[in-house]
Length: 85
Image 1 (cartoon, rainbow, N blue to C red):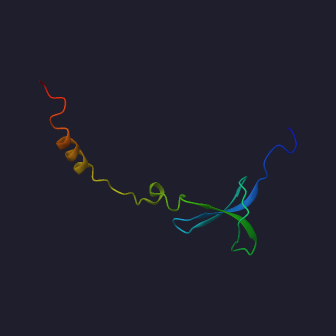
Image 2 (cartoon, rainbow, N blue to C red):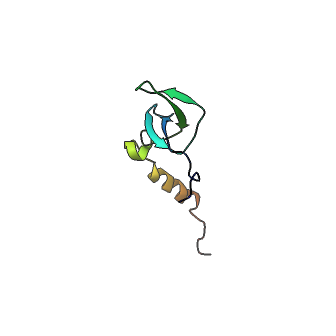
Image 3 (cartoon, helix red, strand yellow):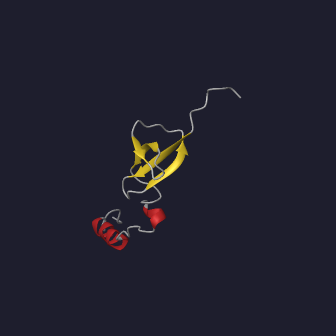
């Protein structure tokens, strides 16, 4: 294996902007922005828009779409389209 071809693997904090949760993990990503963690150490931080803490699939807070109303509107709009002549 060649030396010095792999990216550095460092401890890092990911900050979920939607839920406010922060995760301390390891990553090859880099950031100049830092944050002081609960253990008193300072780590680089990356802000993410969505994570498992805020994604509807993982939280179970999915929006229910009004599919019945959408189908009725579609059928009403295209009622005579493609009919026999």
